[in-house]
Image (cartoon, rainbow, N blue to C red; front, side, top):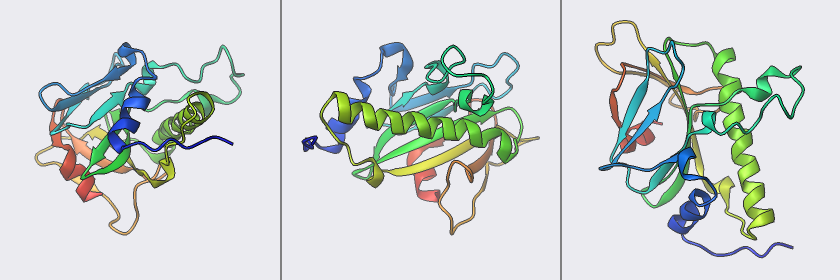
Length: 193
């Protein structure tokens, strides 16, 4: 039986962050995090999140977590990865954001496998912490958000599509029309979802 180590939310973030090599994470610079899209033909190359104090990004699509050298290629959705997974503390409560950047508004069948890939990675991370670090972080209590930022045609004003009664999921992400390098206040995004 694994003994659950009591830790604060900040200690939990630190434990998670310390699992990764420095090149696979990004921390705030002057209170701002940047999510990058590395695709050569991408027109939405980055977005910025402001007022990000207690958080960090795992550059999940750069991690190579699931790859074809391990698994058979008959399951292409296994190899999909979202661009970033953000671990943060919002108003004292821990939360996780799964984020994908797209150059145009994608359909659900395109982004769901990428967001699900992030969710699988997250579940594996929970197992690693439990089995190799003797700590169970109560991730089931952490609020999860799923965002797809996409380059909208002639974006005049940021538009957010959300069913107010349903929390975003990997199969029902919040779609946010934006322009390249636009900044969002993290707190505002989390309050709107």
